[in-house]
Length: 298
Ligand SMILES: Cc1cc2nc3c(=O)[nH]c(=O)nc-3n(C[C@H](O)[C@H](O)[C@H](O)COP(=O)(O)OP(=O)(O)OC[C@H]3O[C@@H](n4cnc5c(N)ncnc54)[C@H](O)[C@@H]3O)c2cc1C
Image (cartoon, rainbow, N blue to C red; front, side, top):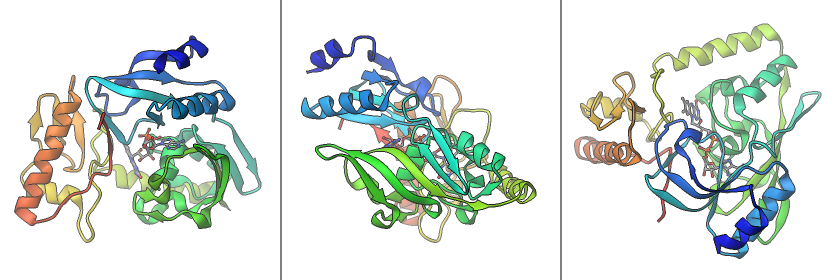
């Protein structure tokens, strides 16, 4: 099956591509096949072919919300960073490709004195990943506050326009997770602002970040906050700060971060995830849900 895709896209489909460098956690093995197409048409043709041939495909954005398992991840991973990277501004309206990194988009908004995207300036993901998971930072904003419409590709249906009113957004989730689709373009409505106000909001974002560990690779918050609780606090109360398995450690600074102290394997990160879940369920009778996605062969 993989043969015909490879034959038709020589030099574009890479085999056994290491994925760890493409993630912020820096763990995990290789993609059986990987493509970073230069044009959107090419990306959609590759995806259509993969779909027809029954090859499991996934889209990788900034790799900042995934943990890729060790070994070989079966199927095809497609990166839209090259082909979906255009940004257009018209008044307070921005149309952006899904492969654009949020800090770049946030800087563009600031340059144009538009407010609304300050929360995104230090989130290391792409627009596509952020829309799908409704990335945000509490009252400082969420993607859902800005999105007007999306252009998506749906297998068997092709390019489709979705208006925001047809998408359900929740805490770190959206209805886009319920069906196979690829986000291609996003239209957003911001508001006119001024540089001083934008700076003030960015300072608040920095304040929030102060308790977060820096200096080691991580995937941001591992668990969602259960209603009425902070996952980090529950993990701290369970006595798990600083606990390590191999090169993976529950940060001493913030319980909801697992950091890669050097050479960690995905299996070690996932051992810590299981340990946290068991301990918090036992001590507090609370089941923690993952905020990150585990990419495995199941
Ligand atoms: C240091 C750090 C700080 C963080 N801070 C925050 C924060 O403040 N707030 C917050 O919400 N998150 C935060 N995160 C988490 C993460 O950055 C966000 O969830 C981000 O939106 C993920 O985007 P991504 O492009 O990296 O997605 P990836 O991790 O690459 O992928 C995540 C999911 O999105 C899918 N996906 C990606 N692109 C597309 C597309 N174009 N079409 C369809 N599906 C797609 C992938 O297939 C996958 O299922 C942080 C992470 C780190 C490492």
